[in-house]
Amino acid sequence: MVVVIEEAHIFAPYGGSTRTKDALSKVAREARKFGLGVILVSQRPKGLDPDILSQMNNWVILRIVEPEDQKHIQRASETLSGDLLNYLSALNPGEAVLLGPFVKIPLLVKFRKSEAKKAGGDISAVDEWERWRLNLGS
Image 1 (cartoon, rainbow, N blue to C red):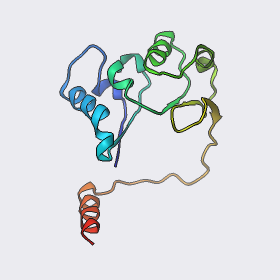
Image 2: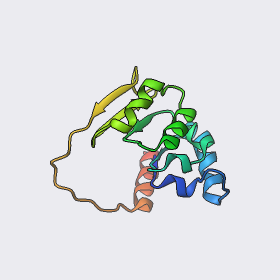
Image 3: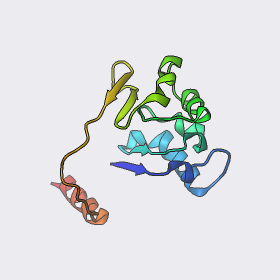
């Protein structure tokens, strides 16, 4: 299971203490061994707790112009070099720097804009969990 936390800097603020921050910190440190992944999304990385940020293994970094946000990301990442850091403010829409075990080397990539019809909906998490649980018994 993967949990996506949008506006993660609100739920796990730097320098503040919230119940969501405490829970997210524990999940970020320990949940992988139980099959739970976390994706953090934030447009203000300097507002995100650095201990939680440092637990993220793989990174997709889009355009970051603000120097303090760039430095915050660099401090939390083991593989963001100064050269790559310099690219962050010049990235165009759809371009990103990929870092972490999911790529062999840091990559600069461009994502295509999807031409697919955009549609969506919510699933019933309870129904999906029950279906998953029943499938384990068979």
